[in-house]
Image (cartoon, rainbow over all chains, first blue to last red; front, side):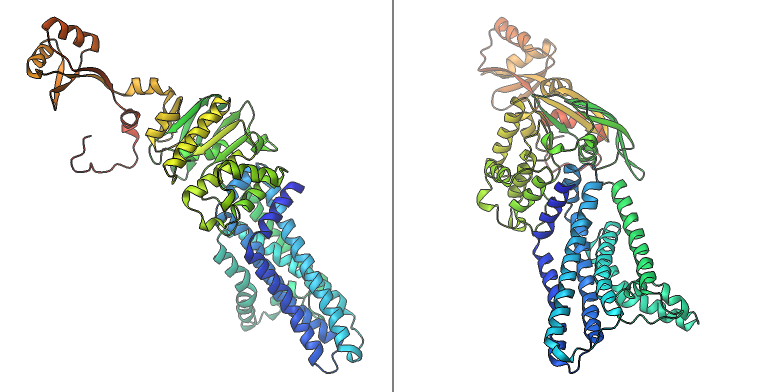
Length: 246
Length: 307
């Protein structure tokens, strides 16, 4: 398995677009957080954490795009064939790839969240007020959300196999589809059902003040529900990739 | 040795490979021939588990490909030189392949030198010509120094120097005791390098065995004669039962009589011969005759072409 992981890391690290997206994923939250810390007056820890998690969600989506590219590129350029020919036990490459992508996503988002938080507080200086209880959980939650989006991108890529279509589903689902569905549910008087939309549930992991009540899932509950969706899509993708012709 | 038994693969309603069985022997180059759509590529993909066959087995020295932990050390397969990410350099393409088997980067550089791509190794593959991609694909095949080599159309896109090079490589591999299976549409190339042939049509086996045996079975033999007095000798030949077809200048092709009989007849009637030679159709002719009933796509004869 180590050899498979090393091989997948070479694949991932030798494509320029990976690094372009990774740099954007790191730079965007960092720059926004540092600018906010430098420019805002009386910046609270809660506000800083909100800025960091809000921007890191975008980073998570970019890392999901990297993961979907990683697998759909295998199908579109048919490098999946020499891959499976080199490793006839398909589980090895099929599992090694998400391990590498999740590792990259975890390291990048944890680093950017940590650096943004520490540097933001230092820059904000005395104006940073006491932290709220949910701040740390939200900062950890957004890293988990990025990992989930990475796995989601990979799982969708395994199923759809086409790069533009996979990226469309990955990005339009949270940005447009869930909003439309939520609007529809509200229109028919079923507001309570919107909390069961997968991405909305996942976002609750990264929200500083989750709130509560019947209309939203808790941080842990939402995270578990989101990961159930992600793992179901991933499992179905792995199953089809294992069985189908390469 | 490769043993394929009762291989069957269907895509929807189309049966691509239909109960195919054949053997590929070590120390020999085996040409794998068939018309377009006959199932050659599908067969090769099924052999290494890329396509899932409905039934049948492929054994490499008694072992299934799927059971091999590090197959590149045993089997080198190239199905299409295009199976490369265009934004990755040739060297990095081989690096990830080598890493699956824990091979050092020095081995990558060795095979790059072997195929003559050292200077282009750092360039992105999208800048490679088709011939360079074929060489890169072959470098991948040679990476693990395998005892069995499977190549699908390896001469595609190669220039004459490249074609000669691949020919020499394949013959060298076979003479070194390796098992070599190669498909190609270039029948002239196959006739130069292959010791054995496996010919399929519509997914079924048409013939298997030495090249000479295949040509003997599916081709026509005749005798060519050149004489200063063709009309007179043609009459003698016709009276002896020969089917005489004149060719210019002063020549004729004689079907239906063995060369010994034509020579003896010339001596008996005092005919002067400038040429007396046996003629046999090419592998291409034999192939077209053997697969005539199994051509999936037929073209209209070109103006003036003989069929």
